[in-house]
Image (cartoon, rainbow, N blue to C red; front, side, top):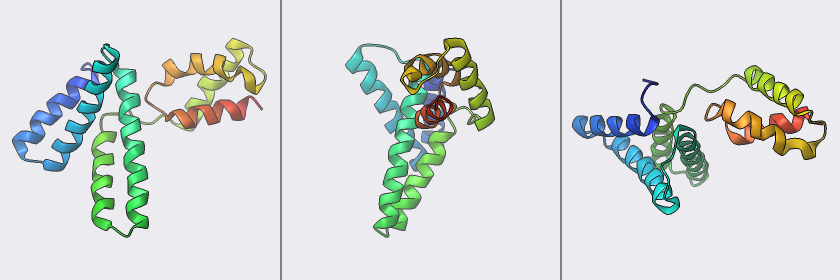
Length: 150
């Protein structure tokens, strides 16, 4: 599976969903692919896997927020729809990175850059991001960097 880029996986999965008549999966994948295409058209670039993963994470984050809203509004139908979409989108992300692994990468980056204070965060993030791409949410990465630079 990992020799294919994520966009190809999304497209293949969309074709399968159309054949099997899985509407939720079809709609979710369509939305994700539309979001990717939108960015590519706007910026006139082709997104690589890391950028696609970041976009998928953003889509998941939006669904999580919508899920919370649905719960507050007492709309179990909307809540379960968002939950289903989150599950579908998460299958295209690599397995989440364990916190220990993230910590080790951040510590190595801090050592490598000689970072010592919170204002060095940017330097550390520059090294950490490509190594972690898509395997940990950005806010978790920056929180770990902040914590270790205190």
